[in-house]
Amino acid sequence: MDQPGTRTHKELEEIFGEVEAPFAFVDLDAMWANGDSMLERAGDKPIRVATKSLRCRPLIEQVLDRSDRFQGLMSFTLPETLWLAERGMENLLLAYPTTNLEALSELALRSVALQGASPVLMVDCVEHLDLIESVLGAQASPVRLCLELDAALWAFGGRVKAGTLRSPIHSPEDAVALAEEIGRRDKLELVGLMAYEGQIAGLGDRIPGRPFRSRAIRSMQKKSRAEIAERRAETVAKLREIAPLEIVNGGGTGSLDSTSTEEAVTEVAAGSGFFAPGLFDHYSRFSLQPAAGFALPVVRRPEPRVVTALGGGYLASGPINPERMPIPWLPKGLEFEKDEGAGEVQTPLVGDAAASLKIGDHVYLRHAKAGELCERFESLILIEGNEIVDEVPTYRGEGQTFL
Ligand SMILES: Cc1ncc(COP(=O)(O)O)c(C=O)c1O
View 1 (tube, rainbow, N blue to C red):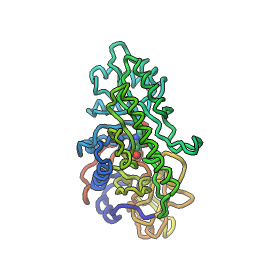
View 2: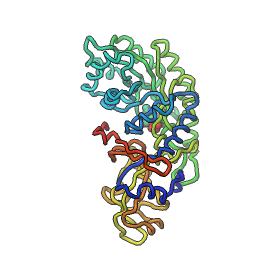
View 3: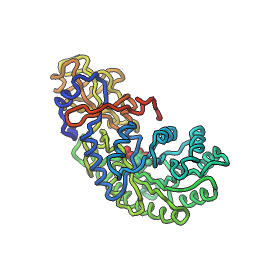
View 4: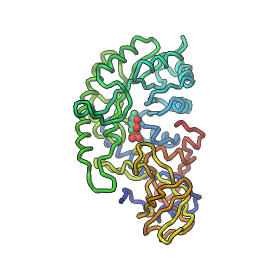
C-alpha cells in the first residue's frame, strides 16, 4: 500500500549513511506539521499531551514549548507521573487507575508541598477511593481525583458495545453516585472528568490496503459522536452541582475535530499524532505525515529479490492482526515474507526494491503505534530538512521502563 509522506530512501540514506543501524529517528518537520494540524483540528481547545505516545522527555518538553495550546500532560503510570513531576513537569493527569501503594505514599508526601498543583489521579470505583485513602496520613493534603466516564457506545438495545472496556461508570447517575462518595471523604477532592471515545479516536475508518472506507465503522462513529456528546454534557452539568470541575478531558488524535466541538469539554488529549505511526494511516477525516521510523541494516541476500535485515520484530500491542506489524516504509515496495513476518533477530524483505539494495544499506520501517517504538531504542535521532540536528534519550534511554 502507498504510504503518506514525501521522504525518499535516497534522502534518508544521505542523512543517515554514516549512522550504525538499528536506530530510531524523528523527522521534526513532519512532527511539527502534524502538531499544527492537530491544533487546527482541536479548534479553540487546548491539547493535553499523552506521554505514552511519545515516551521521550526532551520531545515532550519541546512539544510543550512549541505552543501554549499544548497544555499539560496525560501520563500513564504513577511512577512515571512522579518522575515527570520531579523533573519540573506540571499539570499532570494520570489517565489510568493505579494500585501502586508505594507510589501513592510518595504522592501523598509530595502533595503537601505541591498542594493544588499535585498530579490528578484517575478513579472509577469505591475500591480506588479506599486504596488511595489507605496511604494518606493525617497531614496529607487532599488528593485530587478525576472520574472516568465510560465513553463506549451501546448499540442494538445494549447487546453490542463499541468501545474499550475501561470504566464501569456509564450513566450520569453512576458518575454522580461516585462524586458524592468522594465528597464524603475529607482527603479526596474531585477536580475532573475524563471520557475517552476510543471507538472514534483510535479506530480508522479506511480499510487497510484498499481505497474504501468502512460504512459500518463510519455509521457507528457518527452515532457514537452524538451519543457521547449528549451523555458527557449531562454528566458534566450534574457533576458541576457537586464539585468545581477544573478538567473535562476527552478524545484522542483520531477524534480531535469532533470532541473539541463539545461545549462541555475543556480540553482534548492527543499524542500519537505527533509521530503518526502506521495505524494512523487508516483515517479518512485527516492525514498526517509519517514522523517517526526506525532503520535496520541489510545483512544478507538469500535470493536475488530478497534481502534480510537485522532485527525488526517490533510488534504493537492490541488485538492480533496484521496491522500490529511494523510497516516496511523505504525504499518503497518492500514487503515482509509471508511465513516469517518481522523476525526476532532477522527480517527478510521481498520485492523489486530489494534487488537494488546492497549489504550494509539501511531499510526504513515505521511502528504501528507511537510511543512503543521508544521501548526498543535508547535514543531518537532528530532530523530537520536533510540534517541530523540532535539525538535525545527515550524513556528507556533514561533507564525508565514504566510499562
Ligand atoms: C485516556 C486516553 N486519552 C487519549 C488517548 C489518545 O491518545 P493518542 O492521541 O495517542 O491516540 C488515549 C489512548 O489510548 C487514552 O487512553
